[in-house]
Image (cartoon, rainbow, N blue to C red; front, side, top):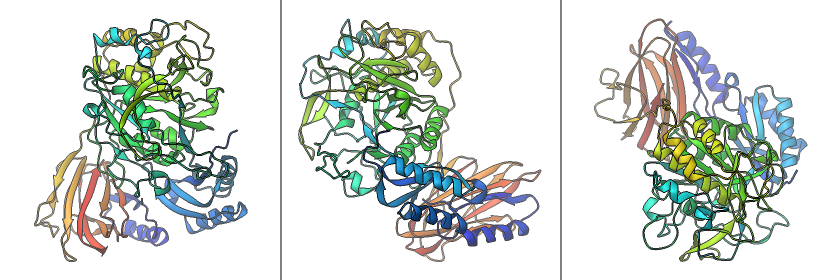
Length: 594
């Protein structure tokens, strides 16, 4: 069996232990494992993302820590471990905020000094992309205007978005009366309370508490701003309820919106956004419940200046592999969109903004990476959607017109939802191709705006007639509740198939929970153990005869992860043991997958 594992406080001792365990393990088992924990500078950043090679372990070695400390001193900062991302990279908090140029210089120093680093990059603060327009328009011209609209009414004869979930990764949402019928519960992914403004870190409350800031709050010279309610506006464009004799209608008014809160005061960190992208499509994220409503469309009305980071690209790859279309704003800086991220990432549908004339909006980015355009509004008319009247904290429901590529992007996300509602078997590449091939010609100048203006009617018609392609299978994760007695190897609870999420509880210091799994030749199992914030639960792996293959004590508030591979030529039995090491007793979750 081969095992791989990482532990934030035990990296050196664990490496020695692994070496000894390999020698003691049966011939069929090899160990390979780790216990895991969790040109415009803008507001800068106070974080770095570092991914260490698997061979060196997920956390830095003693020498790696020294090299990181030395690089930090040369730049006048200290690096302190913050958390682990869903993809296994480490986020380090800096002792002061840096501009992105300086932060990239620090990342380059780390990469050149330590060969065990796969990549290091600034954890960029990305911003919601919109240009507020205080005028309130009484008509949703973007849906039906003959010149600048997207021809949505004709598309609604074929599809309304029913059966499709759209993840809106943004500032969260307000429970607006015109959104509530289509809102899923979502999740708050913001880890920093300074950004979140809700008094806590990650939790199941995706409601937007407001992102207002005073002058200088986001860095010296930054302006004061009112709460934007940006996510509420974006969500309304996608799927505000229709046919209720009130408010506005979303492009895909029968789709479901999964609000994932990643943007708060001053914007949102790349590492939080990447975790939200992965979780949106059903990928497990340590410490979080699994997402039971995976999204087929992901809307990213956010961005910043700079290259596409590895952290973001990996998350997008994960989403696409799960069958989701990722729709991204081109940006509002009137520059080449190849300089804007995540618009310059691979595999995304990039959306520029047009005005009522059908020509390029003055603020919209443009370029070779733009896929197509959609109404984003201009001085002749904004995009009307759901909002809130609060200037700082939430107040009453309202409607208002905004303009920006942030508004154009959910128009395309809504059309993609209509297409998938009409033909759920479409792949992400098919959706992207059909969006572009059915786009209508620009009625006014829009250089660098892609294939044309999105045409909802033509796109849905093409989706209905598209050839059948076997969709990416969606893996359903079973659940298993611990059943006592399972305190010994002989009474170990059998796990019949993977993947499975086990829910259990350690009732006392002497309570041991055992789970029996059969691994075929060449098969591997990854076990992720998560307990309450006051518990430190240990995890061990044993052979059927009771020989220890892997063992790690718990750390209060930290998860553990280990991967074990059967490198033998025949099936073997593995028993996983959960026990209390430190902290309080209580509940735990044990996620098992191949």
